[in-house]
Image 1 (cartoon, one colour):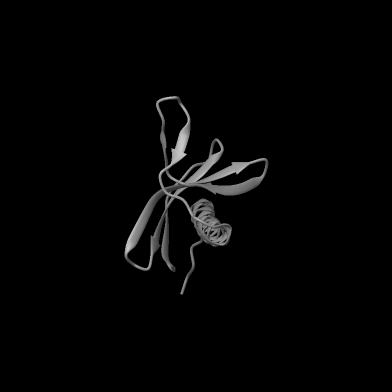
Image 2 (tube, one colour):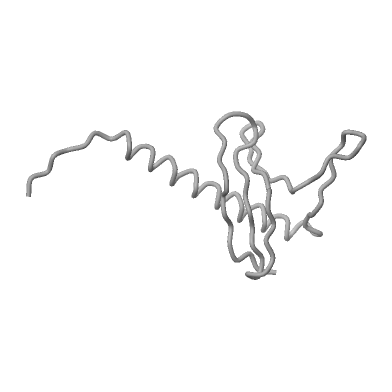
Length: 103
C-alpha cells in the first residue's frame, strides 16, 4: 500500500496535540483524523479512535505491523514538519519590514 497524499488539516500551538492530518492510500482510500502529538519533546502519531462507554478509547483503524506503522508515522511527521516550516516562514514574511525598491 502506497501513501499517495498527506494533508495537514489543522495545526495547534498550545497543548500536546500539534496537528490533525489526513492520509490517502493508493489514491483510493482516505484516512482522516490522525493526530500528531508531542510529549516530552517527542512527536508521534495517534490513530483515529472512539470513546467506549467505560471512558477508554479504542482505535477504529490502525496499522497491522510495526514496519507499516513506522512508515506511516515517518511520512506523517515529515509532512507535519514541512507544513509547520511553511507556516512559520509565511508568518516571518508577514512580519518582515517592507522596503521601497526603485527600479
